Amino acid sequence: MRPPGPHPPDGLVPGDPRGAGPPPVNPPRPERRAFHPGDGRPPGRRRTAAGPGPDHGEAHPVTTTETDWDALVTTALLGTDRRPRATAAELLDAAARHTLRRRAGLRPGPAAVPPEPAPHDPRPALPEAARRRLDGLLAGRGATPAAGRRGTAPDLAELLPQWLALAAERGYKAPPAALPALLDAARARTDLRPRALAFAGPRGVWLARLNPEWRFALRGGAGGSLPDPGDEEAVRKLWEEGLFAERVALLGAVRAKDPAAARALLATTWSGERAEDRLMFLDSLRAGLSAADEEFLEAALADRSRNVRATAAELLSALPGSAFAGRMAARALTCVGLDRTASVPTVVVEAPHECDEDMRRDGVAAVPPAGRGERSWWLGQLVEAAPLACWPGRFGGRTPEEIVALPVADDWQPELHAAWCRAAVRQRDAAWSRALLGAPSTPPATGPGTSSLAERAQLLSQLDPAERAGWVAAFVAAHGLSEAFQLLGVCAVPWAEPLGEAVIDALDIARDAGSYPWSFSGVMGLAERCLSPTAARPLASLAAAAPEAEDASPGAGAYWSEAFQRLVATLDLRARMHAELDGPPAGATALPTG
Image (cartoon, rainbow, N blue to C red; front, side, top):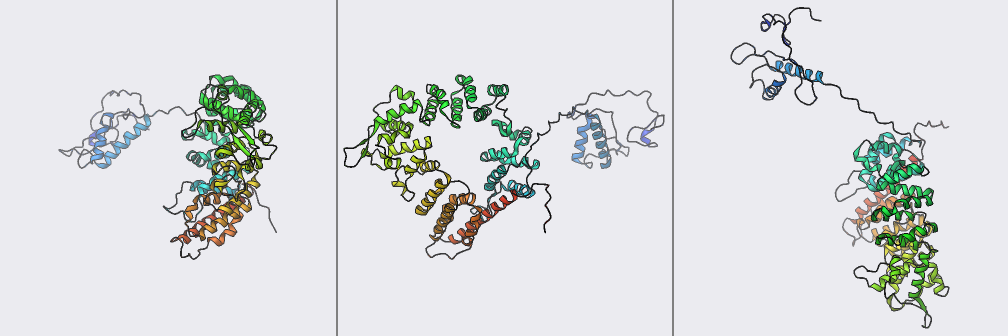
């Protein structure tokens, strides 16, 4: 505390000649104005700092009022040698006083409202080893291999989806510290989002609300943000006010619990929805489709949108007992029959000559795509929409295998069999799918149903997993891997032992043939994800470098060895992932042994 009496100006000490002279009586105080942060001109009294003058030894003060702040900055930038109005120390003193005055003039802003606490996630925590593995996968997801070669290290980006699937099977929750990296990974890869958001749970949604870059997590009712389907008021409010993705997710959730309530909810706004929205809502009826949906779908056949009408017709054709299926069966049976007068029973086809109004109402598109004839186009639509159960009676009680084996007159076989393939997939008929696939040893181009591998993959998906794997294993053994990629993609993971052995044998044969491994990069990628981890042991011998044959491509042996080493390393890592996720939960104390 200063004693009473006159005092020297700030920055001077008693006895300094610059402070000589009587102080002014009642000196006027400069007006203080409100300070607003960021205006660059804080309030305060005039402050001076002594410094030698340019013309004589008397000190000239360096002023630091708000009007002289720019001059002070200029002096600091140019240097006191070029602006010799103060020493460097005095200049810094003046800047310090000015800075202090600026800070003192700041008014505290209102405190931000703290976010609500994160919701509780009742799922168990990850085992410690699994938590460390997740950190490594998330850290390595963006790593890129050296140009031209992948090396022998596993692809962590491809292992992350598998890890998330395994964690979901065991019901673990995401570690809080991993949520930002997990949401970043889901933001970068849309294929990761369903699993990543399910693993992140309600805390991931809570965190996503705090970062606009993660707003994708808030769409579609992710993380359990949908209301309970039994809460009618909340369901109605979200249905009327929610975003489109939220409404689609809501309709699916309500339908899973109460299909009748979902149809009633959809009917409340159906006439006012946009055509593209009606199409998406109608498509959600595929899950749990039943005869109870027939009335709604029949009404949709009169929709003003052609795509909506076509989708309604497709869904009705998947209900063999529907009135629609009966109408289509009657039309198809008039077009396809059996000629018993021929020396060998033969299928004869008489395609429609017109697409009448009733056919159009039932979803038959009148105008064919470019390159397709009208009559074959109409025939295909009728046959694929007719219930498959109508054909055995038409062909004298023959089984699907016997019907498919019949010759077809006038080159109608490709069109007829392709339509039957689409019908088998639409109606999920395993018997017809099996008949149309034929024996796996049969060359694809001469198969009974279709030579299209995409359609064969769809037919395979109608078989049970064991039969599917056996069929593809026999196909690979007969035809190799060049045409097997799409077929392998529909097999259950991990691959059954016969299928895994067939793929490994085919890869070994491809290596011995002298080709490069990147010719089979798609199959190798599938093998890394789909082979059972127990296959690592038989693969170890293939990973060793082998002498190259004289007719082999240059360096092919080394490349194959590298590819097999990477495959073995990936399978070993997948085995460790399984073991880590099956380990003791975090914080558990191991019991002593011995």
